[in-house]
Length: 193
Image (cartoon, rainbow, N blue to C red; front, side, top):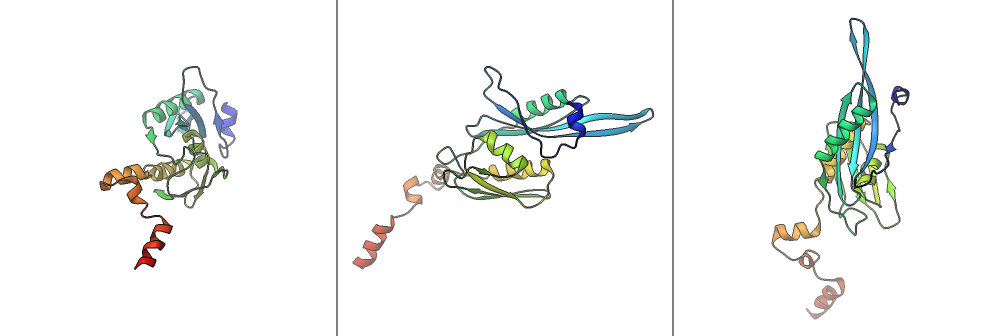
């Protein structure tokens, strides 16, 4: 495991097996080996970024640092479970609307997609969508390629997703009122004038 961490950490994603009674799926986005120079030489540590989700609309991320890789992953997973958010999904497979998220230099555009599209996203964004349970989405990272900034920008976007039910309750209307009159009724009204 330590050898894997020394090999850069790019384009690596790992899904751990589910334990009995554990309803969460966790994906390792990246591991980074960091060195501290001390009197006797270098002291190495590992930093892990993990995304955790239940594949039903809840997802969280966490970062952990430790002297050993498994301990760093464990810490990151615990933090991810504490920071979970709920994202409303349309038909249980995609988002209700397109969103744009920014965190630092990281910038992402996420678009809802028709059924059968799949997850069209790279690296860290794909890990977030797979653990969230979204089946159809198109995403593009426009800014920083740093995995931490990409994940945080994705979460900044996902926290702004709203469902028609939330918008209707905020405006004090029914969900059917938000969509307006059907097109054929509008054409009939125009001809009656």
